[in-house]
Image (cartoon, rainbow, N blue to C red; front, side, top):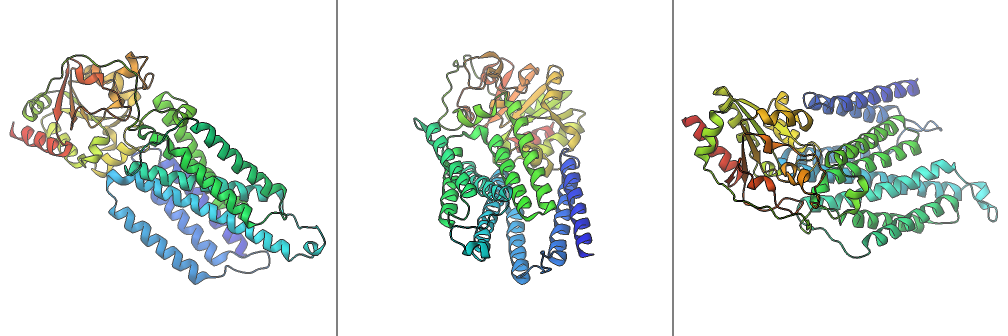
Length: 479
């Protein structure tokens, strides 16, 4: 009876995971989807604590310890989530993803240790040279979980440090050869752990974990900041696969399905991110695009830069028919999303049509701008994807670029020597007037000048995004 109820509970939880993932596909339903998946996870945890038992009919042991861990973990997660600033959301996502990879790695270490202990107590193990061998695929799942989970953990921590600007891009001659040798060595040790099971000890498991952790570090070290959205989604898929391996090891369907969903969603998102940049995954992982050390060989932009005041910009937008706001990471850094929403309200009160153009890789994690604007209660209907908004720029009176750089750089279409050439961009240069809000003329992640700044229909509005946006709101109100 308990087995049936447990199976039904896992089925319900799995359905909520699938439904939650489906709802996450739209900004309108993303919050509901997140809550639905959380409810499903709660059901799975409670059902496991109350109903699970092994083949000998023994229920879970150490229940107080498990509950204590749940309470402590939930408290830490809640505290971090409530205190995190939107500018630090990518870091938190990367950190939590790394914790998932670490968990999968620890599961594999413990399960391999348990298998060795079980083999030592079998009668077969007492015979000279004879060792009890578990199912091969069971061993493969354990080793794969350790390898992939460890890579995800250390890689996510390096991504976290990069996003925190605590660590720059590190590149050296022959780096890819070294990385590949480390990966091959880790795979070789993994094969030994499976093929030579019973004749190897935990020291080999520790060696595999060390190699995987090192590879995760060297794997992410050379990747530039502009490619962080791709890296985060890829590492997320790694964690999902590692969790699925744990589900296979425990024959736990809800863990298996959850891991598969996370792994497949992360993989698909990685493909979408690469498509948004018109680059292959290998190019993202092994090129030197992005970051402080990037040095594009693109042509130098020519022309003069025009500046305007907040008063002029306010007048230009207040008497326009259509204004499109293009948010970028600079908006997040300045925490100007709420003031931006106020500007939207003031313009709409004057009869101006306002919408937001969202590039898939704007910001430092997938969907960063969507999350940022959702926090400011911007209507989901106003968030327009790149493919839909680009044809409308020709009918746009003012395009207001707030902290975006490479995703609006026309060099992606006009300069074959540019490192961003071929990347789909937001066609803001087609608008009648373009206002670019930036602190300075500093280049973006690609390390190249932005041709847009020198276009005759472009004007620069320098200053902190939040302060400047506040000035725009006050100026519009005063008109």
